[in-house]
Image 1 (cartoon, rainbow, N blue to C red):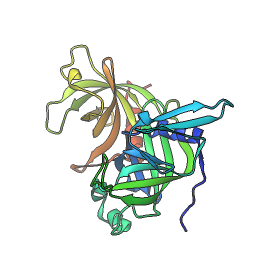
Image 2: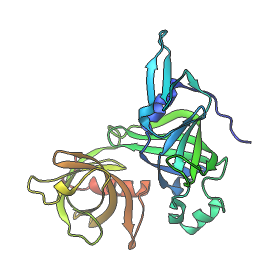
Image 3: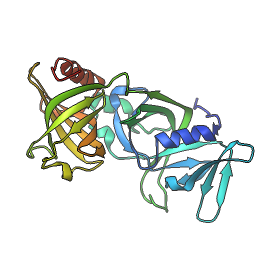
Length: 287
């Protein structure tokens, strides 16, 4: 029997839209199967029947009594709400992410895939400074608009049935400081450039560069890179595909996505994160 979501308060909507903003890349997995981790992007929201494709259309404020309200500015007028009878995140419906799964996982999804109506979908937003936010949703429907910005594209509407954000703070519990010489490549087979791993958590890391770095000026947010970590002490080498999530003066923050294993890149899992952490803790430059 499908879940019937309760109305969401404006505070809950504000919290969700701040952590899962339009345009953000996210991870997700269906039916509580964490090993089926896939990636997607938030294209918009559906709030009280209105389709929103720009974060700028949402205005949060307080009424005269102090009650939070949401104003949605359309091309013709502005609608004010004190709660939402329904709230959905809109994702692309057929990006082919399921094709990256191993055969047993892909087969378990069935012919209609992970976005079958009623399927539970756990959404994951990764924030370098704050940690990991997870949100539970259910597939309400998939639709193909006949007009608008995404005309002809399959869209999936994920209804939020549990608005509580589960937030895991990595800043104090999982982060370690280290000084490990490393290399980055802009793509596989390219020249490797020296850098320094200085900060490591289970999903993110900080990479520093010297003033004379040849590659730093070529790096920008959302760019993919390949990082090689070589730990002489434990005779271990890790090759990681990552995405730059932040660029700072002389350093970048990366989100780790895949790791080289037996000649192929596979999804970066918790066991990989712990493996690297255990090796780093043996490194004399780690504190």
